[in-house]
Amino acid sequence: MKSKINEINKYFLDNKINNVLLSISGGVDSIVLLDILLKVTKINKRLNISLFHTNYNFHNKSNHAELLCKQLSSKYNLKIHLLSTKLKGNNFEHNARITRYNELIKLINNYKYSISLTAHTSDDQIETLLMKDIEHANWISRIGIRGLNDSVYRPLLNINKNKIYNYAKLNKLEWIEDDTNNDLSFKRNKVRYLINENRYTTSYFNYLKELKKNSDKKYLEYLTKFEISKDNYLLRKSKYFLELDIKFLKFFSSLESKLFINYIVLNSFKEDSLKISKFHWSNIDTIIRYGRNGLSINL
Image (cartoon, rainbow, N blue to C red; front, side, top):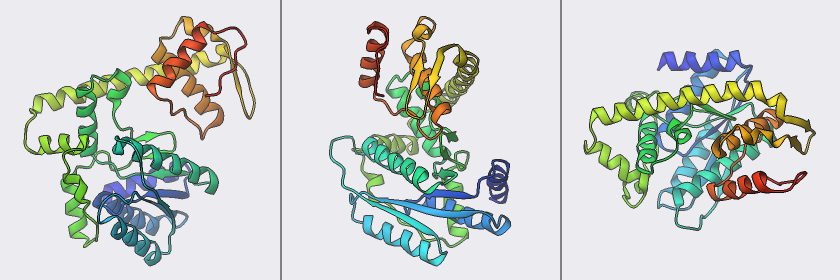
């Protein structure tokens, strides 16, 4: 992983990043990423690491995982932010992700962290791409997990799980195995199980990767298009609002309009991007397209 240490350090130096927030679960992926970051600090004395742990109080090792994260923060003299929550509703995975990322954004803003890091691996990416295909998701969702998205950096996205475990064992790291990873009632766990059972062919995985590649290319084309177009449609902006010329609706589809508005918001306010459900966006799109002139919408 020496090349990964140098890669991460170069990214930090190139982007003048000194204060980072690592989302740590206590599982093997984030424990390995912490160890890598600690090695980065040995060659980059300006780097400060803080930790963020969410205890969902969901499985019998939840408190053990939190304790391990506390012990690591104490051992290496790292600041740690703790969130304890119990989630309601049926879609635990989705709700957990939203809760975690919302808290990450708050911490980044309140404590002025340059960036946050998560320890997603290439295995997570394949699982995500497969789930999106099962759901017949639109092209933007076929991008899957992004290596860099808004304020989140995922440096292990090109590392597979076997390498993660090998590194952890070689460096005698301690981590907590989440028993719920074996619960097949969770969609991701079921997909992971089917992958491990070789239920999918290599050609199918190559097909998913090709879809991702095409989606990545298309997304970059849109960003270029938005950069060229933004000055034509952004009429006014202040600390609290944006005023757009809705003529862009003539040239963009509903999905493109959503991406464009999100692009404008992100580049105007930096720390904010829109987390809007499909249902909510459908209503917003209808209002924007068919509402009266001068209408104000709170996103």
